[in-house]
Each structure stands twice: as C-alpha cells, then as structure tokens.
Image (tube, rainbow, N blue to C red):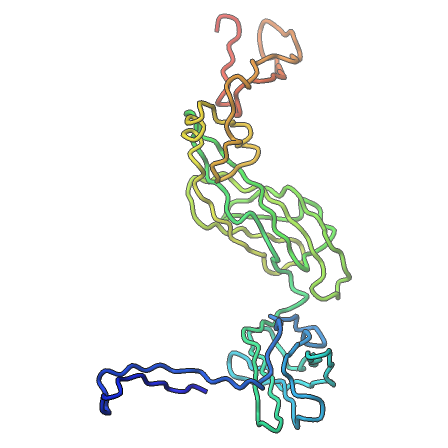
Length: 325
C-alpha cells in the first residue's frame, strides 16, 4: 500500500513548517501480473480469451481462484475457471463465458488466495460486443483534401475512401449498397468480400466498401453512412476534410506548374513536389480522332473528338469555335 514519506530538517520540531511529504507505493512482489491482457470478446464466444499471468502461485499452494466480470453498473458475474495451464513461469487461465453476459464494458477481476492472503489483479476496460452484428473494423484515409485553387482553377478534388466491415451482408451487387454523406448520396465504386464465412460464424465476414468522397469546400469532420439490404441500422465512420497544400506556391517556387491531372486523379493534402510538372514536359495539344468528320450545313451534328495534351479537365475549361465563330 501507500507509505507516507516525510523529509524535514533534523532540528525542525513537529509540526515542522519546512517539511515536504510524498506517498511511496509499496508493492507486493508476490501478486500475479498480467501479460498482454485481452481487450475484449464477442458475447457469443464460449470462453474468454486466454488470460496469461506471471508470478501465479504454484500448483497446490493456493486455496481458491475466482474470476469475476464486473459491469459498469457494478453487477458481478461469477465465471467458471477450468484447470490452469502451466508453461514454465507462465500460467494461462481458461475461463468459461457466464450465461448472463451482455454487451458493454467490464472489469475482469482475478482473485487468488494462498498462504500470503488474498491477491487480486484486474483487466480494465474489457469490452464485450455482439460478434454477429455488422460493424466498421477500419477505414481510411483518415483525412482527405477539400477543393483546391491553383492557377485560377477551382479543382473539385474527390478522394477514394475505403471502409472494411465485419459481418456485412455478402454477395451484394454494387447498386444494393447505399452510401450517404448527410442528405446526399455518395457514389459507391466497389464492394469486395474479403473473407466469406457461414451466417453463424462469430465475427468472421470481412467486406471492403470503396466510396468516392464528394468535393467539399468546407473543412471539418464529415460522417459517412453505409447501408445494405438486411441491415437495420447503417454503419457510420467519420473522415476529416482539410484544406490541401498551396500547390500554386509550391510549384511556382520550383519554377514549375501544378500537375492538375495528377492532383485530380490522386488528391492529397501534403505538399508533395511530385504534383509539380515542368512546362517543357507538357506536350502540345493534338487531335487524335474526329467522328463524324462531316455534317449538314444546317447544323445539329454531334461531333466527338479525341484530343491528347489539351490542358482542360472540365467542360468549363473548353471553348469551341466553328468557322468564324
């Protein structure tokens, strides 16, 4: 326990105004210690994850061993402990899941009594979750750029965002997955089943959903929602939109131009010189194909052109003049 330690001048009488004090924690070297304690489990699992301990009493030297799960509301659930496994200096506990276990946060208390008395160690912040419910396992990137200005252009930067889901419905068509950002729909680019398991497999299925984030001018955290047939509640995750690098200033300092095409194809926040291009590396525009190459004098013919090297990325960047205009 805590031992108060007082430091004062030898000649200072009690009570001494010049003394200082601190608490020194005296530890029992025989108390078992947890080694890489588990952080949680699915409530459907028949056993808790293996609990590994150091300095556990030797076989036959302790009189009782209790494992108790304490919920946030102080409800205590007694667990059945199977015979312990010994691995050299380490001891592993096999603990059966209590029947009344529900989702939530717990403290797992391990109490052992030997000749030295009761010794207790606890796993804090142990989370119990539904192993069959759909949930977001990971997503990224965590940050994407907002729209950018460069060379008088407003670049509508749209980043690819992927989320990996556990227990997501399987074998879905692209059109059956709906993604939204606020009230607006978000384009779903790809749905890939990474791991496929039976419907009763605990926390097994893995599905990656790839979205095309919209071009936003305002920075901040934005919450995406993803839903599919058979899901009662959409899954959500938040991505941060941040203003990107000033690529105009970055590239101008190198006497180069902003590589608009690369920035639109692979948006980034970072000031990466790879997004600059030398003026001499930009090829002159050239028409590769015109179809059809003739039409009625009255007009109305739809003409399709294939052009290489034209520095235009949206219809607003292009001006077409026919004849004398």
